[in-house]
Image (tube, rainbow, N blue to C red; front, side, top):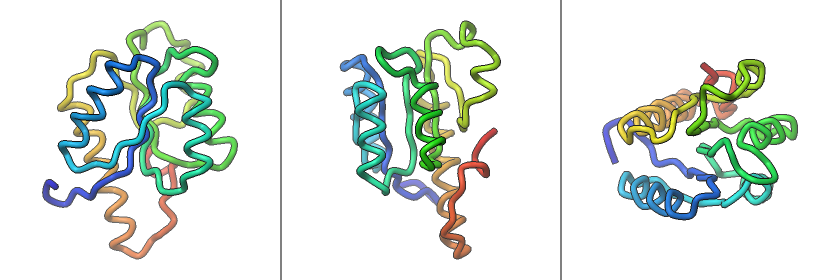
Length: 145
């Protein structure tokens, strides 16, 4: 574990199995606990059944439920979990849709690992500081950029 960084439980959501497996293996080497889902419905179910998820990293373009729709459903149901959206088509997502999302970051695929790790570390540090200061109410609005 790096200095001042706490381990996070991260839910990775992507319909591309190879990418999901690779990203899971990479993030586990940084001491994070990783769970995966291959679509938005599965991800929503996992969040509803696990209150210990610290961060969601989701693809945008998935069948049945996009990453944006997943973000919206989670937020509307009271699950205020930091969310990073990754997509290969950031420029084609309507600005109105991006503005409506409650997301910490938007990353263009393929993203650089260093960029993704920087965002994860930022969330980890913020979360750690909340608990060190005795503020157990870790609210998403503090993490939306």
